[in-house]
Each structure stands twice: as structure tokens, then as C-alpha cells.
Amino acid sequence: MIVEFLSLFCLGLCLGHEDEKKNEKLPKPSLIALPSSMVERSSNVTLKCQSRIQNVTFILEKLQDSGYKREQRSAGHHVEFLLTDLKLKDAGTYFCSYKTMASHECSEKSEHLQLMVTDYHDGRVAPSIKTDTSIIILTTFSLLSIFLLFISVLFIYRCTRHGSSHEEPTKR
Image 1: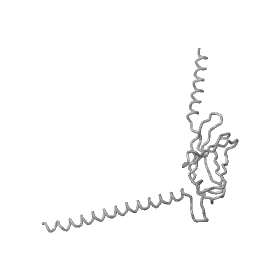
Image 2: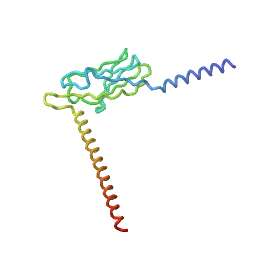
Image 3: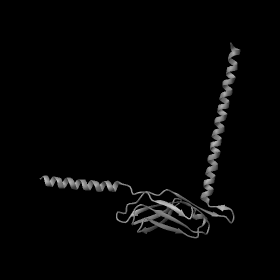
Image 4: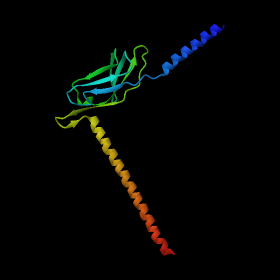
């Protein structure tokens, strides 16, 4: 009876340990661009996705394009996705993840990588950079407007207080 109880107890501990492993998240992979994340149009770039776990299938996706998905198996810790003959439309935000071959569990997504494709021949830059520039200009304008509004309110408040202090002695 004691042996049966110990057997069931050990089985419960083992099953509980497996459940804990299933609840653990797989480590987040990293994504880098080689030679750089800013490249000229018609050139090539390699997006290298790597993790601490071996024998996984890496998945490369693009934030602005839900239909963009490339998969590649790896026997090691990383894969390299080669993007060739880049166009301005290839610019954007990329990320990768991986799934294990045994359990098909998916990892968390990597940090986003902003790929910028430039066209130096006519001075144009990829749309993603133009968007970033317009956001910076809009943010700067908004902050400047808030600052000027604050200064105006402070000035009006000071003038109103100063004006009321001159009136008090004359009423007495």
C-alpha cells in the first residue's frame, strides 16, 4: 500500500513537472541585418535570426505585410534569410520567431528590426523612413504647441494676479 502511494506520488510529481515545462515560454530569438539595416536599392541584405535552442524552424515575418512569411529549418542555432535585389517596397519592420520540431511550440517574437532601403540616385528614401520623419515633425510641432500654450497660460495668470494686486490698495 505504501509502495503504491509512493508510486502515485512520484507519478504526480513527474506530470506536474511536465506541465510546468509546457507553461514556460521559449526564449525570444534575436534578429540582425548583415551588413546593415540601411541598404541601397538593388543590393542584398541577410536577415539573421538566432536562438539558444537548436533544431528549430525559424519564421521571418514583416509587420506591414501580413502575407509575408518565410520559414527555414535549422540544425544549429541560427538561419540566414537572404533578401536579394531590394526594392523600396522591401523596406519595413521585420521580426522572427521559431517553433520546435518536436512539440511545434512557438517562441515569442524577436525585437523588431527596421530595414531601410535607400535610393541615392534620385534622393528618395523608402516610405517607412518618410513616415518616421513625418511622425518626428508632428511630435515636435505638438510639443512646441503645448509649450507655447503653457507659457501663454502662465503669462495670463501672472498678469491677472499682478493686475488684481494694484486694484486692492485703491479700494481701501
